Length: 150
Image (cartoon, rainbow, N blue to C red):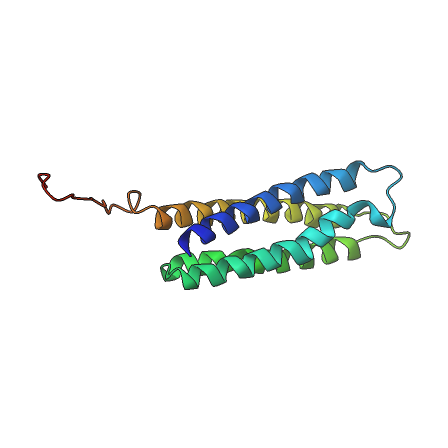
């Protein structure tokens, strides 16, 4: 289970990296139609939450410490916050639908929250690797064969 946890946290980290790429694709798509951010939306609202829940489940099954289980769940809360930030930024336009300074500031928080989420996932991945590798956790496994000095 611990090796599976390491693998899933690595996949989750890749999904977050791709999320930034998909945001850039949306930002640079010309003309920017409704589908410009489709990959960004699907990854953020479906792929990342599923991987986060799978990470938390594997952390529990791997008998990870409570702190690691809590950190494994945290990206889900940050994704929910991302959606709320995006909705608030979209709603903060003037009467003609033009962005306002307030809306753009809130939009900037969307990027900042994404960076924070990546840092959390990096921490979860590091902790999972440490949990999976007894040498990193300070436990040395020694194999002694019959006839050899211990």
